[in-house]
Length: 330
Image (tube, rainbow, N blue to C red; front, side, top):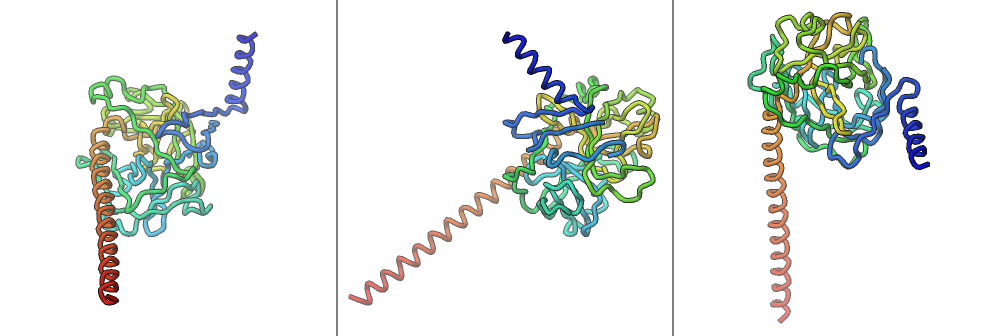
């Protein structure tokens, strides 16, 4: 009877997850990363669908003088992972760049997002704009996002692996289901980005496949790039998705395995998108994260010590005034 009961529950769960050709990903709520307040529900960006509210808490939209230009992913409360090509030519305009998290709509039209200013940018030192090699950058914000909000969360990073194993395994492994999100165009004929966040499921494509080689020509470096798409086209990233995440569901958590980098037009048959392979850059990312944590700790300690010194000085002044009053009354 118990076996029958559990089989029945499993059947119901399976039907719920697969009904209407939709898949519900149930993430680990106890995890410190890779799980948003609402579950990710996907059906079949370009050829995709509008996302469920707050199902991707780490997505960030970036604006230059209030005009959207790229997206990125929260890897800590004040660090955004994005593409180098998004921001390499905007370094002289950092004071005009803002980031919004917690909103599925561009320009925070739903009024639910948090806005922050950019403090500094770390471009990979070996970035090549022509070949889009090392197309990765990290943005540090002027102050952290409020992560107590249920609308925000942090995406997980791949586990540290050697460069040799990355090349050998082609992580993410070809054939793996991946989810791509962004505000990019949803049709080739469009000139403006989508006003609402979109999602689509694609598959990692082997670097030796014709779809990958045709899209990339000489640009794919197996260590730093990977391809993703679907046979026959129809699902892809497009203009406006740059810098955003492409993710795998690993151990009940969402892991950013790639950054939208480049490709040949959008969702054409025989052409897959090209993504920065995040696993290769874990040492670069962790170095920036460690520097950020050290700086944040120093600032916090300095602020705390400053406050304590100010408190002590106030107390001393009060004591001094009281003593003066006592002496004057004697």
